[in-house]
Image (cartoon, rainbow, N blue to C red):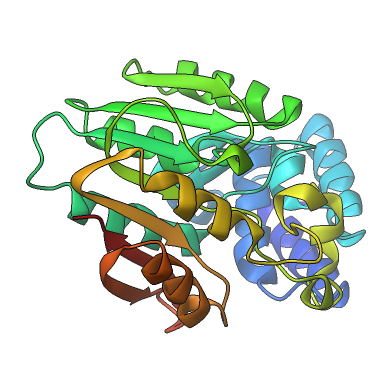
Length: 282
């Protein structure tokens, strides 16, 4: 692509992404051009006739080749935006999704009147949820629990890079349920995709860690374990807040109700899908 202008490179990138079946090809083309050129959207518009350097052209060719093979763009770039912040991502870690911002917003609303809240994030992954809560509530203390090596390394990296000094990282299995201490809020975006639904997911998902997506035969496994353990880890009036799959809200509410949670509610994401379930203990 040497000597191609930004304008031509952008249009050709869109065409190749579209031909590969990538749904949001226009958005991704802009993201890729920003990454390659270092321009923001405004500068891209102002520099449409600027020619790419040989290095930029080679970098663009490599990215587009990998992306049209349906390798996740987030992994290619090595980072992704979540709740207005940049999180490092890569092989072996679940990519933060915009839907999960609904969980963060709900969690923040649940502790808005709490002074110095104590929060736990189970199945923390990159730390997108727990680190965001730590930064949004700098007066609080956040414990992030993650079992697997690769995401735990990204968890440490993101906490350090984003300056989450009030975050404590613990390498442990959330399926153990109970965590030490008393918390005002426990949040979790656990593995919840059923085996049947895994086959219908986009091709990119096959590159993500399957253990972070699918818990096996019982898609509600983590909800049962975490709900059961949270009862003894929450302060009176404390809340448990889950992200759930598109058809799981009612079943997760039943699990939590059986474990003694009250005032159970469901929150929809921006697409209108039931995405969050929460409840409180007495």
